[in-house]
Length: 257
Image (cartoon, rainbow, N blue to C red; front, side, top):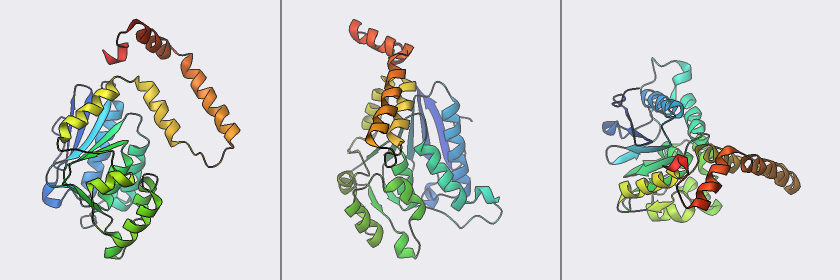
């Protein structure tokens, strides 16, 4: 994939960071079939590129994304229809082996919030705002509920899903949708990319899988046993030996050089 991307998404790799930019501002970065396809290709490219350590998902224009666009689907194959492609993309982001940061410099609505929620870290400017507008249009925020509900406080989820009310970036931090609100989005995103650069990539991927695990089924004893096995495997690995040696020598480990 070239650095210019397409006319709906731009893709660039620099300094170990893949920046994926939603770039259809005239359509409020609506999640059309072409945009979703380009997003999937961009994440596939970032996943396959060994030089990429972190992905940043951001946007051009005043709207991060206005949500699903179902107006241009007449000639699109069934697998690429937004109603099919969008959940596949959300799962791809949620399960991505590398850290993904959302940088929100404007409004996010409906499916756009699903993209934010699927990312590991979400940063926004104070002027950003959010709304689950589905119920006001006679539809249900069903697909996005999969990544969104694990992020939100239950009372807030009930209130905001059921009313469709617009809420601020500061409220989004308070309920768990965002990590940080900042006037300087680029600097805060860069701070996170630098933090991730110091982390060993395989350990990051394993930690992401650990965080996603289903804790509702096993007993506590079973969960402890599985996690002890995971921990022991990494303690015995070459990366852990390098990390511990670097810590003792007060130097950077090889992956952070």
